[in-house]
Length: 341
Image 1 (cartoon, one colour):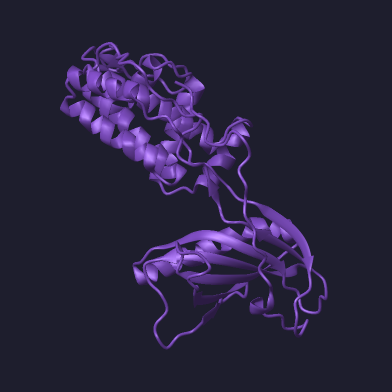
Image 2: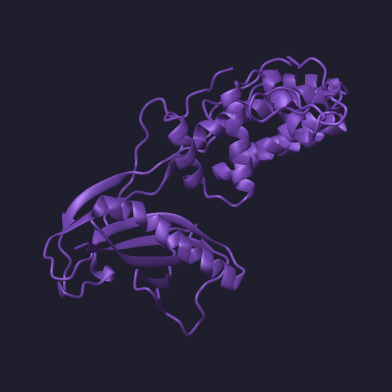
């Protein structure tokens, strides 16, 4: 029989509890989970204003860790719809076996996320590159591509990053597409489609999808990677979750990850911006530049497994009775090192 677990989260939202509500509780109609919501204390984390505990069942603590965010996320999606407000999971504080009657309980405690500090890299040489690009004379196409590229670099989720980088490629591809006519291809053999009446191959200027594919090919991406790009784009546009996309594509290519896809299309977007400066001509080599090891934001969180005792009634434990240890991460030597140039 599955055990019961409690996951204690901090959540950032644009709404808080009403004045008369100190705590709200909710149980899913099918009994699969229950939620307890309260305003967080300022000492918990300045970036979060709600504390939410989710109680649910799992076979063990590791499966519970997999289910915790997924369960809360689905509840918050409903709450966001009902309130027309933002709810974003800030971080998981602790995960504890909450099965009644236990004297010793397995628990995970988590540190706050540690992000790399700003790197010491901004130099006069980089400003010279900016000057060279401005001398080239940014046109309307380059300015649009730069806007989407900057949004992609700065986005907080991989899904948004992929979409923004795709906008760069699509914007440049459509604006610079060749006037040479192309043929429609047979989905089975790849040959040109022939009209059944006149026997001629159908030709036309490239459609948007064909122009985008041509730009990916120009930038040196393989057919497999290009197919993955289109699959991800179409799946996101149809509302498919990132986890489902990863599962589908990993079945085809075990080494696939969404993070790798973001890095690949980020490189494609970078190349497209260079092409945009010359309106489709030869890409620029403007001078000194920085290149990250990944476009995906990286943060580290410490996780500590403990066996704990909860004071009070072992058949009715209270999360307020669980002592929260002070946990901090100390960066190892080399964190914040200068990226490649």
